[in-house]
Length: 491
Image 1 (cartoon, rainbow, N blue to C red):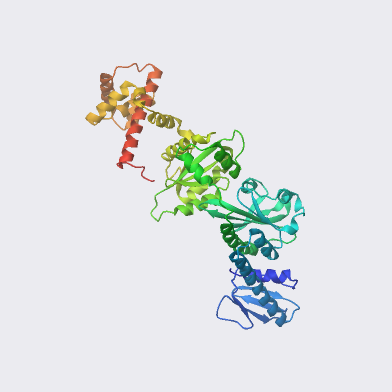
Image 2: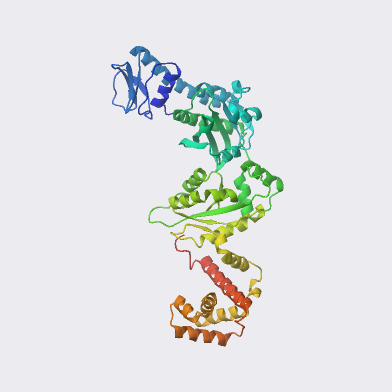
């Protein structure tokens, strides 16, 4: 454990020494001497005009009205206290101590109530001396029910009371200013699943940034203990979601358990899927674990999974509306593109939602990194049509004839007709859109009319032909991409 000058300072304050404000408390302290050392991690004590100064590197603080020898002994005791505390936790794990025993050993350092539970909310241990203590109204339910479901934190993140004061790996110092207190929250992950959750809740002692660092040691020991006990074994929600993406049928109990674990039990709730792909850059691509980690930190109300080399986030539709600004900034920061599916109700639609997000990705660009499938409804319907069995039977004969002629003569009659119909059959505008002369456009139009016999005055027929040409074009694009002859240039 890295023992810092701020931890020494806090220990002396706790013991009642008259200590001044601290400057540069992040400095690591390995040992304490009466004389300066060449090692920047060695602290030394000296007399000053106001008392006794303890200095380590760029950090220092003073103790007033106490003899130098007494300050030296107190600082050495503080260093031993933290070292022996860490060893006591490690030895407890070695001898097979329970989570409750580890909490009992940790409590003297934190001096605050601790709750440890699995991510489903099963309580594994808590600081028993606070069992009957109502720790302010906001936390009383945790004491009474003795469980802290992980989705409680997700709901807190939506609250105006929530603020991250500091973060160190998996531990965060959270502030609830309107309630006048803070707490430390920590989680253990396995394969991007939260299997353990703990909170150290402020009671009579102010929680500090140094305590976040101490919580890292606590978290490490908990991880070892929970692995030995086997209490952290859970049915992975990532496995459930990946199975749904593979179109596997999941039993209702698994779905219900997943919704409970994620706090998504609202009846009638709509969900959306976001698919992230990194843009090619001149430098090295970001590691997938880095992107996953950034998504988990910045989009805490989403469930993040990695499936078939794709980074996917799933969240409630109403939550996504509130988070769109974060999604946009995140895509720019990570240099990724983000495709967003249409809203869906049933989890059996998850695979379809993925393909919708993937389709939206095809319309992303460097200047437009986030695209909704709903903004390209026709393309979605055409893509759906192309995946329909015997869809060619639904195509208008005119589209088939022109496509066959283009393939044989290397011409562009089908595309010309599509642009012509999209521009209300205006010859001049169509020629301009295609960058061809008006006479060339007139020639192509006569050739089209020679090859097909149809009523272009009928709006339903015009729409049918347009959709049919787009469907044929989509099929060619898919086949070329599958053959590796054509790819989206920036993905």
